[in-house]
Image 1 (cartoon, protein in one colour):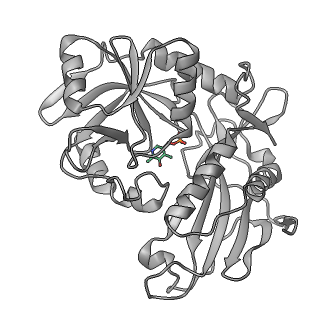
Image 2 (cartoon, rainbow, N blue to C red):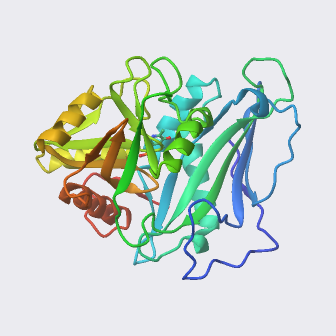
Length: 355
Ligand SMILES: *Cc1c(COP(=O)(O)O)cnc(C)c1O
């Protein structure tokens, strides 16, 4: 593997001002990482270049059969000026698992991490420092072979782009309302639900539009076979605290194995809370809401970290989660994880990696 070439931009952009709300995924930094793949040659020519449009043939395979994958993680700047990544090796491991599922050649883990570090370092000045802000890192791979037949591509581009993002909840943690989808499904076991690919998102758009029209911010998916068992929310895994026990759906092959999910389970166990990863039906949730044992509901994902849920709607049933406010475990998880990410809470699990 050659070392990473570095071409600096000649026209640096103006950095966003301190009061810019940094709406998620709208602002991009000065540079990007890019590396090519060709069958017979492997991954080659890793380089950092000015952020710029791509030049692709209209016949590039990604446009026709959707051979594309992505990842998402964040970099934080600590008060002492260190740059920290949160569990990047989990993302890299998951990326290669996704690659195997959709026939994209794997990326050596050390090169992947080196690429993330190098591009974050190149645009270090773009890491925002206001409370709740971070630099969102988006690695992704597309199939670029100019060919209309159906088979895995022989050419790929691996890229990493960066976007400074504001606090997910500018006024602090804020409970969301969730729409439980019982018509459409996102994924089934044996499909691509456990891979982080754009195709899962295109399958979700129609429900998301419906939920938004009804005044709900996110969709909760049920399993594709019985339309009964809880899967996950949009781009988040889901947790329930029922009668003192923290419960989340088991990794059954159709839900995404979230890094935040894994971290939340580890912390709950460390705090001595009873936890369960199991199959859980919507009827059980409804029952718990009815009999007053549904203590807390929250989603987990890199973007929001922890997202408390105040209300769930299932057909005609509206389930209120306690008083609709932020539960104590949701708050403690949010404070602990963001504290570790910012180097302000003791990182006993060695989750952070310095750039
Ligand atoms: C990325 C993602 C998540 C959350 O995973 P994290 O690693 O915690 O960010 C959950 N569900 C889906 C469908 C996702 O794409």
